[in-house]
Length: 234
Image 1 (cartoon, rainbow, N blue to C red):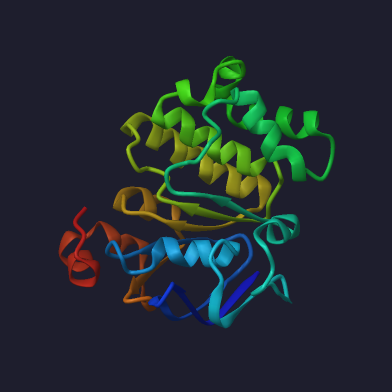
Image 2: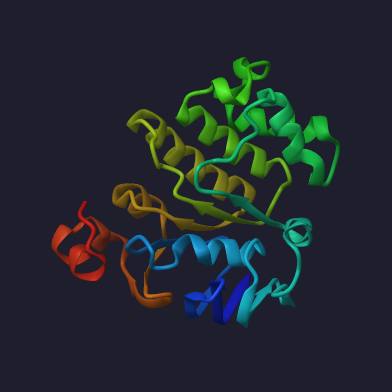
């Protein structure tokens, strides 16, 4: 579904990605682990077009998207749930979903009704302002908003950050079910080792702007091994 070849990106004169190469097969769940500052979020931003690539290529479903704008990538079927959620706090939950449905392939109401079936927690909150939701509810809204456009590939950045354990468990079940029912491909950047291990079929380690290693998801919950790779503990 996506082929990334020698991808480099920088913030001004500071290089961050130093030649990322990766193949992502359709309908797989790929987790990416690494220290802070190793390029995880930068990789997702570059794949979405929010940060321009300085060199290398990104191919999506056989087409080169390296220099497409974010909205063009979204129209082609790439969705993005950013770190920090970035919902619209002054809009209602319903209006946040309507923003996500702008690129829905069918009717807006059909897209939103379908999403609410899969995110029932949001139904009683439709009139509430996004900024009045809890952190966990905001994260569910951010994910639901993204899925309103029916993407085939979802880039998911640190979804458990600042979220209570009960919502994390709910999110794990929801994402697992959504991947199967919607035939999604998901690239997940995450620091919660249990979360990434339970969901991912592949786990990649990023170090100094490069994918350095692929490990079995079961290894992620072994404190000794994962600390050796990325310095994180379960």
